[in-house]
Length: 238
Image (cartoon, rainbow, N blue to C red):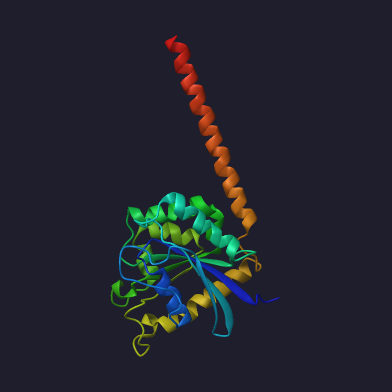
């Protein structure tokens, strides 16, 4: 049975263009955007629209490493988006910027893995913004191959990646590859194939709970280990 509605969560660093990406996919400005280093999105926002005959719900999330939001505030809000789109998302879009894969981008991938476990990559597609920064005639796959970290991420995501440009690729008269309309169509094909490969399953709240339980167990082991270490030092001192 074909999934009647796709639920897609958008993840990425503040300022990378997540909200603009959502507007580009919907071809309508439903998500607030700005051009500063601070995120316009402080709470999860979900919108649903028909795209190429498919009902799609996009869930925009607050950006990682936002200067206005602490880790204690950010994590619960991003985690909440899973329960907000029950029974769970069919796909995640991990948004990165072309020509920028620094330690901060690597830290974003690490955070995503910590929040959702490695299981998330089974449901993830990498989406690059600022496509104009690709070299002339260069594809995003070729760009990936030039960087070890991005190449590793691509392998985790089953080689699923696409590129758009929220500012410069709106004119579809140019080269087909450098057209948002073309890239969105290809992205939806990729998600369709991924959903079918996953037997139309989604990332569930139960998966998230397992991650939380594992984190709590690790923290307990660290506390116990630290306690033994402190106790041993006290005994030696006496």
